[in-house]
Length: 290
Ligand SMILES: *[C@@H]1O[C@H](CO)[C@@H](O)[C@H](O)[C@H]1NC(C)=O
Image (cartoon, rainbow, N blue to C red):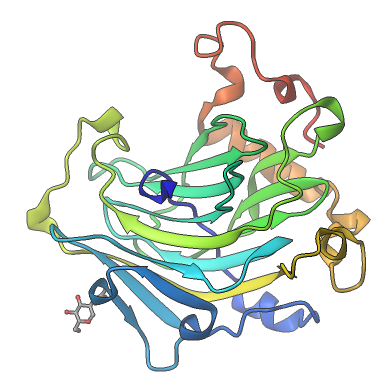
C-alpha cells in the first residue's frame, strides 16, 4: 500500500463536544484494541490499559502503524494526536481497490525551530495528487490537538481543532474526481519520510534524538460501516447525519476561519502551481469551494 508515502491523519475529538453529541451513528468504541489492529511492528506500538491511548514509535529498526477493522463510506473521523518532535506521522483514509481513493492528513516533520507542515491530499477516481500544505499555528508536539475529516456526498472538509483548513467539493457532475463509491479504511502510521518529506529530502533524521514517538487518543469514528451496499451509506437519514443540508457547505463561521488559514498559513496549493500543470490547472481549481 502507499502508506509509506502518505500518512494521513484522521483525527481527533474534542472530548466535550463529542460526548455531548451522542448521535446514534458513532461506530467506534473508543478502545484502540477494539477499533483498530496493528498493521506494522507490534513491538513499536503501546496501548494504554483502558485502550484509549496508543503510541507509535519510529526508530532505526522500524516505524509502526495501525488500521481500522472496518471500512467506511462517508462520515466524520476525529482523532487527537500529539506529534513526535520533528517527524512524519499521520492518518490516512484509504481504499485498497486498484482504483485507489484516498483522503490524507499527513504531518511532515520539520527541522527543529521551523513550523510543522500539515499536508492534505486527495486521490479520487484514479486521479493524481492534489496536495495542499499549511503551517500550523501552534506547536503540535506540545499537546494533543484534534484532527478531523468530514466526508459526505457534498464535500470533504479537513479540520484542525475544528478550524477548516481544506475543503474539497464534490464536482463529480463536472467530471471532477470525488471519492463517493468505494469504502475506505482508516490507517495511521509513523514512518521515516526523510527521503522526501522535509526540505525535499535534504533534512535527514537525526537518530540520536530518537526514538520518535507519536501519541493518539480519543478517536471517534462517526461513519457508515461498509456492509457491501453503497446505497445504504449514500442515503440521507438521521443516522447518516453528515449528508444533511447543514453539512453540505461551510457555515459562515467556518468560511471566516477557512479564509484566515488560507491567508496566513497556506504554503502550497496545487491549484496555484501553474508551472507543475503547465497552465492546465485541474478543473476543480476554477470551481467554487462552497
Ligand atoms: C512502550 O513502553 C516501553 C516501556 O515503557 C517504552 O520503552 C517504549 O518506548 C514504549 N513505546 C511506545 C511506542 O510508546
